[in-house]
Image (cartoon, rainbow, N blue to C red; front, side, top):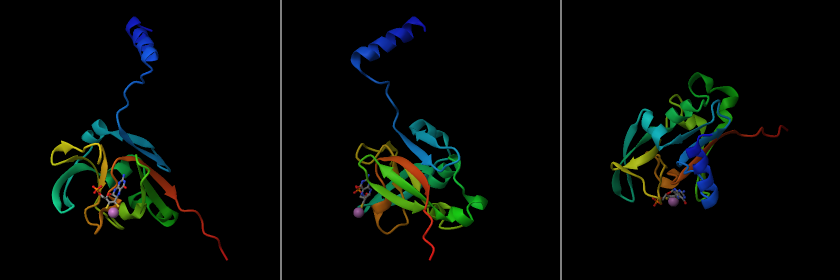
Length: 165
Ligand SMILES: Nc1nc2c(c(=O)[nH]1)N[C@H]1C(S)=C(S)[C@@H](COP(=O)(O)O)O[C@H]1N2
Ligand SMILES: [Mo]
């Protein structure tokens, strides 16, 4: 190990500091390619801008469309979203433990086609610590209950089988 790396290791051991971890949103569960997206990863993907108000205050939100992220993580969308896959749902979880559910089909262009982005920017500025760094923006809903702040994790699950009679 080169001396400088060794010295860094000792410094970390002495201070008890862990190498800084970039905040990221983790896509896990039944994705074909479980993935994490930090600010840099989101910057490289196609960006979507949405005009939407919260608390009556207009905002210009920018981020990556949720269906784009789902495709990146290998969710069964498009032709793959049929039959039993229509029992798939997403749990969006936040740093404060808040959770909401969407069906996978809500985001698919051939089903709900819900407009939603994982926003990292509002009016050209990174989201503050209360909202961000990542927030779901779902502009066409009548209430903002699913505009999850401080998103940390998006899990893909399949609803359990129902009991037959
Ligand atoms: N992480 C997190 N996101 C959340 C909530 C929450 O409690 N925690 N509340 C939701 C509800 S019920 C509403 S109405 C909006 C409120 O948005 P605001 O906190 O920007 O006012 O955030 C939604 N997102
Ligand atoms: Mo709410």
